[in-house]
Length: 120
Image (cartoon, rainbow, N blue to C red):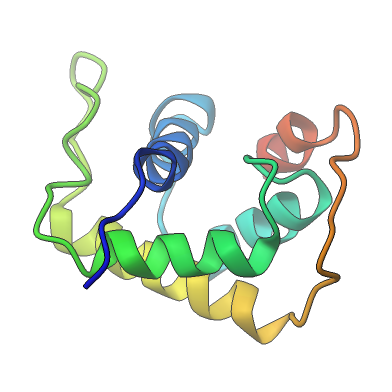
């Protein structure tokens, strides 16, 4: 397997951070999968084509690197279980992939990611 770039782990960390802190320890359910998939397409977390971001999610999932323990939870907050977070990322990659194909060159659209991820 090719080496996974640091940006790919950064992508996963952005998703984890949003789920833990911005969304107040969100439930990693299908509604959140759809919401994050939409938000990532409207305003990608990285200036990389969406197909490359999906491939990065899958590459990170193929590693043995712990993903759910990057950030400490707030006091009294339970951390996500590793298997739970990995399953969420896998479903997110599946959802994104199902909505493709995407244009080869994508441009970021300003300022909507936080609003889309903040909706409940």
